[in-house]
Amino acid sequence: NAGVTQTPKFQVLKTGQSMTLQCAQDMNHEYMSWYRQDPGMGLRLIHYSVGAGITDQGEVPNGYNVSRSTTEDFPLRLLSAAPSQTSVYFCASSLRDSLYEQYFGPGTRLTVT
Amino acid sequence: AQTVTQSQPEMSVQEAETVTLSCTYDTSESDYYLFWYKQPPSRQMILVIRQEAYKQQNATENRFSVNFQKAAKSFSLKISDSQLGDAAMYFCAYRSGSARQLTFGSGTQLTVLP
Image 1 (spheres, rainbow over the protein chains, first blue to last red):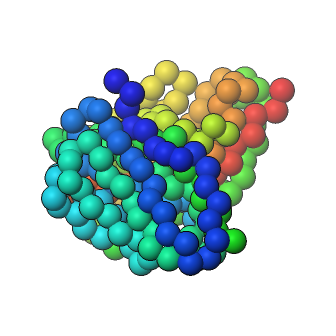
Image 2 (tube, chains in turn blue, yellow):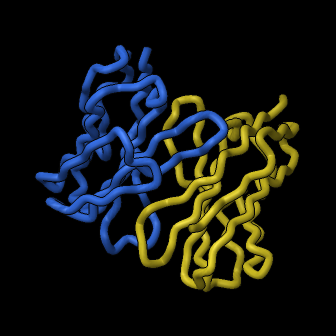
């Protein structure tokens, strides 16, 4: 198993550009989520999904869109990038019935200039 | 809403010594889970240890153990016999029993001195 994969690892955008951060998992996990990590603030939840076709907002959803058309993929879309979205983004997944383990991807470092 | 507080932005420990990282949380729920994650310079998030709120016994994983004080809402991590590879950012995290989302603290940067 590859686990949770994220692409790209690094990205630089100009203000106003759009892009999609990709996240995929091959563990047949129902639950997937996106977090952003900023210095001094830990990880904050952006959006999450409990299964294909079902998504919901987390703590900091503004400026981001998600969709879940398959169990494996959970892309995060930035429609019009802003400097405030400069951050490290993590995707995570887990089994619906799992009490414990969430598996994290390696992260994407995004810089918006 | 639940909050997780890590009041020590940075800590250092001498190799082979013991260090304790602090974490407090606020919740009105009775069913929840607590976690410590390690993030080395590679950025990978690694689960170190977990504690179920309904268990009175403190969790232990090799050199890592927790001091879970439910009434005080405190969840500290003790690292014994510290090794250079323990140097990392450590995050305390909370999860409600009815959800999968994690609420993280702001992290503690641990330096291990040779």
